Structures are given as structure tokens and as C-alpha cells.
Image (cartoon, rainbow, N blue to C red; front, side):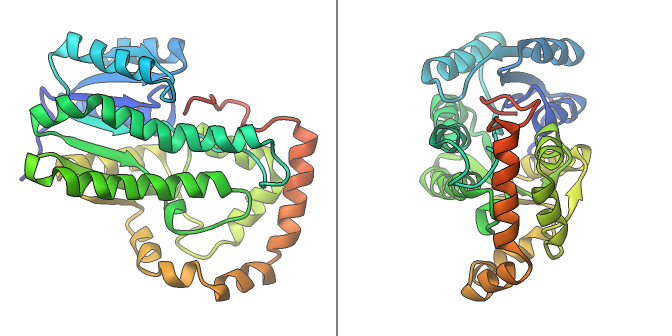
Length: 290
């Protein structure tokens, strides 16, 4: 059955920019009450004013902050019907070129942040027989040099969502995981602009892994996934093929193919670029999630 969003409360993390901000606009256009959580108060305040919504400054790795964001949303709207666990970041460079704290921070935001967000909101979602959309990635079932922590965290996010779904089916809660490919957000543009090696590697990927999708198209796909209470949302839909071919994508044959197309050389170039940059995250990325 269609899950009508009119007069429903939708809490979105990582809502200041990118997918989260555009999804908030699309949900509000459907008549939803939107609550925005993130780490950029100026952007959150502006978006909340635009959408007549609610906002709360929140680091998803801080349980007290997440709890307060949930409590503030419930106090404002009386409950929560949908949670979109979207906050995410990507560190720059390979495992050997970047500080371990940057790798750990990526996993903490992308995976632990989802766990904290969902756990805090779960009692309210169960009471509403609502829906959780957890934003994973096509990186959950593919691998690319320079994305070790990101791929690991997104694979963990997918499995967290899969188990959460099984645990709560009889309670009326539905759970979906979203798997976007390259979305034209500030975070992706930062990495592309900072690392010529990364941009070159992205261009060399086979279809559909080299697809670039607008943030508007992505937000609409996620919203349709919420309205349909879908268990999987692929953006674009062709990414479903990558998951179906996961054994091939992660096979020894694929490793040799990546080497043949210069994977080792690109990794070395990426390491040199990151050393020159002198930072571990993109210029406009916030370490608590875009």
C-alpha cells in the first residue's frame, strides 16, 4: 500500500546539503512535516525557514545529541513517522596515505551514526508503524581504490538495514536501504575537484558504475521508495545489476581487470595528491556528514 506522506513527520539526518536537503524539499512538497538534523546550523536554519520545518544541530556520532534531536522533533510534531538516516562523509585517499582518524571518522559517521539515529528514533517509529530509509551506496557491493572506509561502512549500513527489517516486520515497521551511485553533491564534487586521480578512476569505471545522477533525481527516487515502503532503492535503477553481479564485481578477475586499467598507478597518484592537499576531507564537506 502507498505510504502517504501528507501530514507525516519525516526526520532527515545530513539535511543541510546534498541528498538530505533536496529530499526534505521533495517531502515537504508532498505535504510532510520535515525535521532536519545536521552540523551546519546556518544552512539548516535557512532550509527549515524555507520549508516551515524544524531543525536541530546534531552530530550523529554523539548519542546525546541524536537523542536530543529526536526528542526535539517529537516535542514539535508529536511523533516520528519516517527516519532517513542519510548523514555520510568520505575521507580522501588510500589506507596508507591518510591518517587512521580520518578512516575511523568515516566509519563512525556512516555506520555508527546510522545505528545511533535509528536506535534513538525506533520507539517512535514502531508506535507509528512507520518507515526507515537507510542511505547506503552502490559502494556496498563494489570496491574502488581510495574508498576503503567508505565501502566498508556502506556495506555495514546495508546489512544493518537488512537485519533491522527482519527484526521488525511483525511490528509493522518497514525498512529500506538506498544504493545511489555518484550523486552530484558537494561531497562528490569536492573529491572530484581535489583528486584528479579519483576523477580519472571514476571515468574508467564500466557502466553503470560511472553514472552521475542529479541530486533532484536521486531525491525523487528515494521519496518514491519511502512512499512504496520499498526494501531496496537503486539510483539509478541499473545499479541493481551491480548487486546481482556482486560475486563477479568482487572476484579475482575484477581485481586483475582493475590492475590492467592502472589501479595501482592511480592509487600512487592519489596518495601523492592527498599529501599535497594536507587534509583528509573535501573543502565543503563537514566531518559530521553532508
